[in-house]
View 1: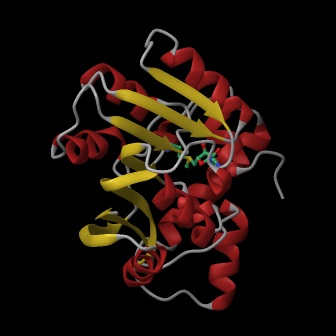
View 2: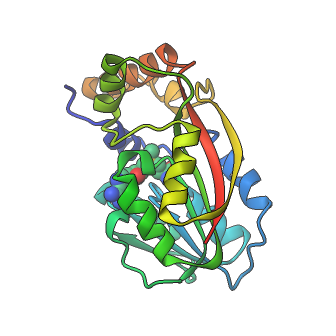
View 3: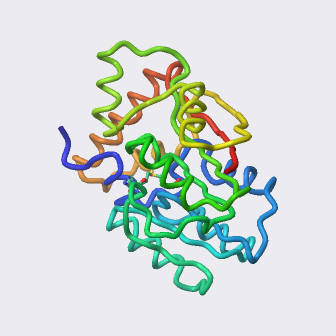
Length: 235
Ligand SMILES: C[S@@+](CC[C@H](N)C(=O)[O-])C[C@H]1O[C@@H](n2cnc3c(N)ncnc32)[C@H](O)[C@@H]1O
C-alpha cells in the first residue's frame, strides 16, 4: 500500500482534466449543448476545476462546482476566484448542498465510480431541473474481469463499483432518468494521459512515483477490459 492514493496524486501533481478523453473530449461534448449565460451548471466532483473554468469562461454560465477533497477544492477555488458567476463547494455528491430542480445541466467526469452510485444518481436527479440534462463520462467495464482482477482494480483506485455500459444505463433508469443516450463507450488507454509525462519527472517523491507506476501498469494490463462510457439523459 503506498502513502498516496491515486486521487491524492492527481491533487498533488495538479493533474487537470483527470478523466477519459481529457479536456478535448469535455469541450467537444459541451459544444453540442445549448448552454446559455443564464444556465445553471453543476460540475459534480470538479477535481481541480478545469471543466468549471472552461464553463465559466466559454459560456459565462452560472457554475457550481463541488468536490470533497480538501486539496482539490482549494486549488479549484483559486482558479475560479476571478469568476463571480462560479462557486466551489466542499462536500459529498452523496448529500448535495443544493435544492431540488436547481440545475439545467449536471456533468460528472470520472467521479461516480468512486461512490455509491445508487445514492449519488438519486441526488443528481433531485437537483436537476425537469428537462435538465445530465452528462456522465465514467469508467466502464468493456469485458469481464475475474474476481481477483476486479479486486485489484477496485482496491488500487478505491472504486466503489465498476459497471458495464448496460449496467450504467440500468442504474440511470432506476434513478428515474429519461431519454438515456449512449454517446460513446470505448477503451481507456490513453498515451496522452498527463500522468505518463509526470511519471518521467525526476523530482517526484518515491511514494508518488509508486502510485503512478501502478496506475500505468493497471491501465496497460486491463486496456481491453477497462474503458469509459459517455451517457446523456434527462429528467
Ligand atoms: C478522477 S478525479 C476527476 C476530477 C474532475 N472531474 C476531472 O475530470 O478532472 C475524481 C474526483 O472525484 C472526487 N470525489 C470522490 N468522491 C467524492 C465525493 N463523495 N463527493 C465529491 N467528490 C468526490 C475526488 O475528490 C476527485 O476530485
